[in-house]
Amino acid sequence: MASSKRAARPVTHHLGKPWCEALELPDGRRAILRPIQPVDAGLLQESFKQLTPEEIRFRFFRPLKGLSDDFARRLAEIDRDEALALVVVELKPPPEALIVAVARCSVLSEGDSAEFAIIVGKAWTRQGLATLLLKRLIEWCRRKRLKRLYGDVLDDNIAMLALADSLGFQRFHDPDDPEVVRVELPL
Ligand SMILES: CC(C)(COP(=O)(O)OP(=O)(O)OC[C@H]1O[C@@H](n2cnc3c(N)ncnc32)[C@H](O)[C@@H]1OP(=O)(O)O)[C@@H](O)C(=O)NCCC(=O)NCCS
Image 1 (spheres, rainbow, N blue to C red):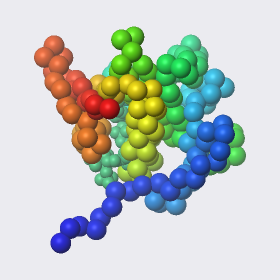
Image 2: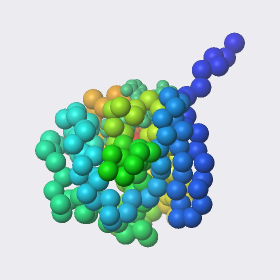
Image 3: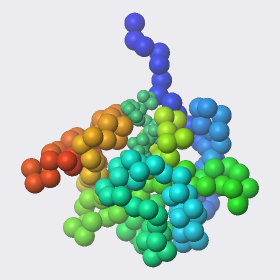
Image 4: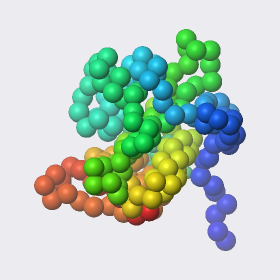
C-alpha cells in the first residue's frame, strides 16, 4: 500500500495586493511571505546574525561575518522587471520580527534563464518553506516565459540537493569546479 506520509507544507492565505501571504506552518508558527522591500536592508542585516557559518557557506559560498550596508542595500533593492526576491517574516511585533527565509531569482543577460538562491533559517527548516518559496519563483519564471531556472549548490549541501530533486531539478556537474553542482529545472 502506498505510504500516506505527506510532505510538511504551510497553509497559505492570500492577503490581496500588494501581494502578501499569511502562512501557517505545520508546527503551528505563523509568518508572512511577501516581496522584499528596500526598507528591509536593516532587517536583513539583523536577521543575518542568526545564521550559522554552515548556512552562510551554503548560501554565499564563502564565510561572511555580516552584511555590509552596501551589500544589504543591494540585496533589498531589486529591479522588479528582472528579479524577484521574497522574504518570510515572523509574525511578531516589528522590533522583534526577523526575516527567517529569503529566496530570489534574477533573469540572466541572455534573457531565457534565471538563477536562484535561497536560505531558510535552521529553526524554520523542514516546514516546507523552501519548497513553497521555490514554487513561487518557478511561477514567476513561467509567467515571464523563461526556459529554465537554475542554481549552484555546494556538493556537500545534502538538504538543498534533496530539495532540488524533490522539485524535479536535474543535476549537472561542472568539470572546472567539482565542488559545485548546478541544479536546473526546464520550465
Ligand atoms: C536547503 C534549505 C533551503 C531547505 O529548506 P527547508 O525549508 O527546510 O526545505 P523544505 O522544508 O521545503 O524541504 C523539502 C524537502 O527537501 C528535502 N530536505 C530538506 N532538508 C533536508 C535535509 N536536511 N536532509 C535531507 N533532505 C532534506 C526533503 O526531501 C524535504 O521534504 P520532507 O521534509 O518532506 O522530507 C535550507 O536547509 C537552507 O536554507 N540551507 C542553508 C542555505 C542553502 O543551502 N541554500 C541553498 C543554496 S542555493
